[in-house]
Length: 479
Length: 96
Image 1 (spheres, rainbow over the protein chains, first blue to last red):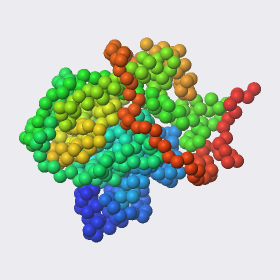
Image 2: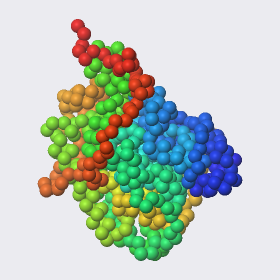
Image 3: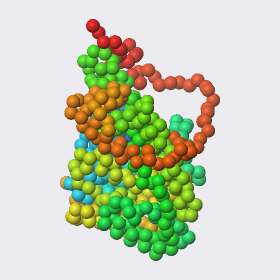
C-alpha cells in the first residue's frame, strides 16, 4: 500500500486506468493515511469513496477545503456558526471532480471563512506545519496544504482570495495555483469576498495542478461569472524557457523580504536564465498599495456576504433573546471568531455613510491602477515573478496579536488577486528562518495574464524540473 | 482614529454584540489598520474609473421558464427552529 502513497495524482490515475490497482484500493490506502492526521489538517474524513466515475482522475481521492459544500457532508468553513451544518447541495467544484472520477477524502481545516494567513483563525484549532509542528502552515487553505505536504492526501483543493492557496503552498513546500478569476465556478463555495474568491488546486507537482485544473474549470450556469478556460488544460511538457520573458517588479529591491527567501528567489532567477528565459525589471508602482486596497475591498464584501449568518435558516442560534435583533446580535457574537468580527467591522465601517468614497471608492480605483500596472508589464513580458511570501513559515502565535503584521504575509499575493490574473507558487528551495533554525520551504510565484494558464503551467513545469525540489518534511504528519 | 462610540455604532450596523474588552480592543486594532489603509487616500486618482469586478461580462440571461425549486423540507432541515413549514424567529418587537 505504501507505494501507492508515493504516487502523484497523474501516476495513480494511470495505474487505476491500467487496472494495476482499483479505485477502492487507492481510496483505502489514502483513507488509512489520512486517519493518522496529527496536524489537525482534517475536520472530517470520509469512510468510503462511494461510487467512482471513470475519467482523468479515476480513483484519486481529493482533500477538500471545508469551504466547499457537499451534500450531506458537514461543512463549517472553519466557523462555530456553521458547526453541524450539512448542506443540501454540492458545489460545482466538488461535482466536477467527482465527474472526473475523484472522490472526497475529507474536509480540511481552514481559517474561519477563509480569513487568515496562518490557519490560527479556525474555530477548530490551528493546523500544524508538517515541516515543523511549532510553526503555521499558512492560510487560509492551511489544512489542504498541510495534508498534501504531510502525506495525508495526494492532492487538495482550496480557495484563494488574496493568497490563500499560494501562501500555504509556499510555506508547506508544495504547488498551489490560483487560476484566473472566472476559470472555475464559485457555486457552492461559501462566499468571503465574491469579486476575488477563486477555487484552485494544491498538489505535489505542476502536472497534478494542471490535471485538477482541467477537471475543475468550465462555464457553469449556476455562476454567471464563471467563463472557463477556452480550449481546456493539457498536461504541461515544456522543458526550456527560451523566448520567455520574466519580469521582477522594480520595487522588489526595497520590499521587506527575509534574507533566506531573497537568496532562493535570486537563485531561481538564475535557473530561469539557465533554461533560456530572459529576466528583466518592470515597474509595478501600485502593487505596494495592494494590501491597503485589499483590506478595504475584501472586508467590505465579507461584511455583506456574512450578513446571511443570522441564526434563522441554518447554523447555530443563541436562544433566550427578547426580540429578533437581540437574537441576531447574540448569535453572531457567539458564532463568529475574533478575526471575522474584525473584518466585518472594518468592512461595515468602510461602506458606512460618510466613509464610502474615502475607503471603498478609493480602494476600487487603486484596484484599477494595479490591473493597469500588470497590463503594462505584460506588454513587454510573459510573466511577473516574486517570492510567494516575504518569509518562510513563522511560529504559532507569533503574529496573532498584530493583525497588520499578519496581513503583510499577503503582500506579494494580493496584487494578482485584485487584478484577477492567474498565479502559481512552486517550491524553489529551502531557507533558514530569520530567527535561525532548520531550513524551511520557500515558494516562487509566477503570474501570467488572464486565462494564460496553459502558458503559466508550461513555464512552471520547465522550472520545476530544473529546480528539482525533492525535500520532504522531517516530522511527517502521522505517528 | 476610531473611538468607542464609532465602534459601537458600526457594531450595531453589523448586528454584532461586542463585550466591554472587545470594544476597546477593536477601537485600537481598527485604528491601526485604517492608519495603514489611509496611505491610499493620498494618491491622486481623481479620473480613475473604479474596478468592482475583473470579468467584463454582459448580463447573462436565460429563458424565463418555470422549473422545480428545492423541496420545502430540504431547505427547512438545517434550520434552528423550523415550525409548520416556516422558519420561526423571536418577535421583531421586544415584549413588555
